[in-house]
Amino acid sequence: MDDIEMKPALLFLVHRIPFPPNKGDKIRSYNMMKELSKDFDIHLGCFIDDHEDIGFEPELLQFCKSVKCIQQNKLLCKVKGLQGFLSNKAITLPYYSSAEMQKWTNETISQNQIQRVLVFSAAMAQFVEQHLSQLRHTVLDFVDVDSDKWRQYASEKSGIKAWFYNREARLLQDYEVQMTETFDASTFVSDDEAGMFKTMLADNLKDKVSGVRNGVDTSYFDPKSDFKKVESISENSIVFTGAMDYWANVNAVIWFTDNVWPLVLAAKPDAHFYIVGSNPTSKVQALNGKQNITVTGRVEDVRPYIEQTKLSIAPLQIARGTQNKVLEALSMAKPIVLSSMAAEGINKPSTADYQVQDDASAMAKLITDLLEQGIVVSQQNRAFVIEHFSWESEMHKFTDLLNGVTG
Image (cartoon, rainbow, N blue to C red; front, side, top):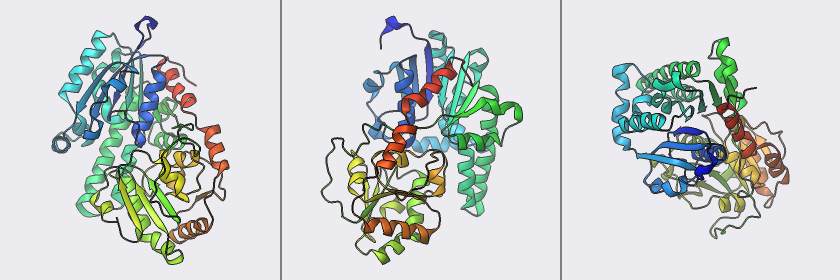
């Protein structure tokens, strides 16, 4: 970074290292960092929860003035999380607690006379709570209403698990509301998500909340871009992309393989389903090789899987917000069949190449009909993304908020 520019200092706290941008939250935080680096000297503090993400400080320093990456021990984090039961806190908070991160945050604010703070995810707000009254412009990007996700998880469980998830939903919602009161502005990944959160707030807080949508790199996710083909992909195939240790993605593919995929196979016995994403859980791994299903695990590039299959699917049953997997498929000019949950925040009109459906049998029929066609290049889908989902225009909203510009 060029010191002569004398940009304002910005503390940027992220719960997961924003590089490489290879999963949903990291894609958003990476693009936030990239765009904000044009206007601010960024001091980045983040955690690393995957050994594959170690060693990327040089890449981060292309955008940041200073970087602090702390590697997490997931087992230790889970043990720390249980302390929430002793303090009557949401377990999310002690899970991410860190004396090292707190010390670095305190020193960075003091040494760099920081007045602007951007926090990515509610769990990271704890590190600046003690400083908020002295800071000038503070923004908390919740991304999603995490408390509601826990509520959704609880609705699918019973007994002690339902109690546990409901407890986390209640306590985390209390913390989300408290942070909305103390931060100058709070943002979510879509207007729909922001609107849902506003229903939890008193009227005097609602104006502090807004949506800042995800975008997509349409030059990278372009069917005409240069990427290596995958030779083994079957002709009549569909694909789901996403981190396969994320509950919402795991839930989606299990629901789909239980309820929809058998109906597709009954009509199209040669159909093939690719589940593409890192760290598949044991439940997802167990699907590999059964019912014409391939679980790839981590791949260097998801584009060939999107481009070479006939359609993408996003049958999410849990989660809200704008889904990167949907935007990427649209940008690749690919037909997509998705659930209403996955469609939230996108607001695209339904077409033959973009079908929203929650009923299992109807979803199977849509997929079967699309498989009957050849490879379809949906220029409508790509044109929609190019027009409505620019990273630069959306991320600039954070610049405005950090400079005290609202409305």
